[in-house]
Length: 106
Image 1 (cartoon, rainbow, N blue to C red):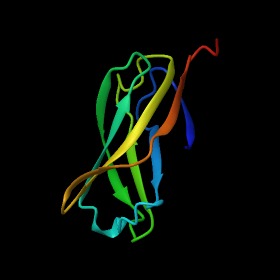
Image 2: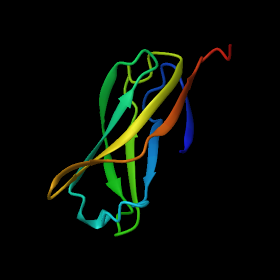
Image 3: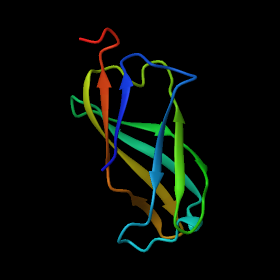
Image 4: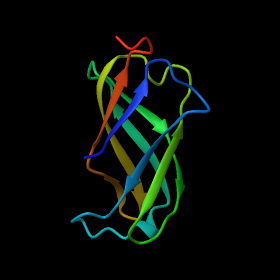
C-alpha cells in the first residue's frame, strides 16, 4: 500500500497519481480501456474521481486525477482504489492510503 499526502482544499494544478501493477492477479494492464478512482473519504463517504491513463503496458499503468475544488474536503485518512475497465467488466486495485492534511499544518 502506497501512502500519499495532500492538503485540505487543494485544487489544480495539483494532482493525485496512482501507479498500478498486476500484483498477483495476472491482469494484463494493456487491456484496460478506461479507469477511474474510487475514494473513500475519512467519514466513509465514497466519491469517484476521473482518471487519465498513461505509461500503459502489460505490467504497469499510471492513473492521474487533477484535483478539483471540493476533492479534499476532510482532514484524515482516505482509501483510494483504481477502478479498471476491462473486457470482462471492472477490476479494483488494492487500495492506496491518502492522508489529507490540514492546510494550516495543525
